[in-house]
Image 1 (cartoon, rainbow, N blue to C red):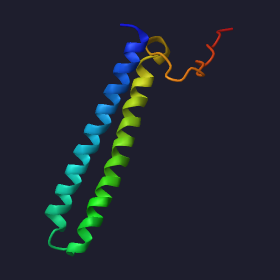
Image 2 (cartoon, helix red, strand yellow):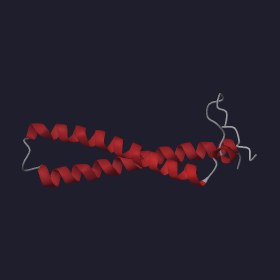
Image 3 (spheres, one colour):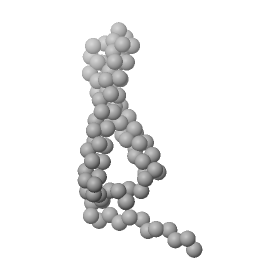
Length: 98
């Protein structure tokens, strides 16, 4: 496979990962809120619970994505396997051993 195809698969996989994590965290938070807070909170507050669950799930998926991406950056050199998405990108200069 070439670098462009690797880049396409990486972007598609990262997007799918982000959507799946967002949905899983959202469902988990809604179940937790509904199991533990359904009797305590008034009905009008349930819309706020849904809104806070959406915001928290987006934040959690962003943190999970950054964690996984940092692990990948430590394991592989992206310049060797992926084509830059933006053409103005220049890889960092290589360190010389003097």
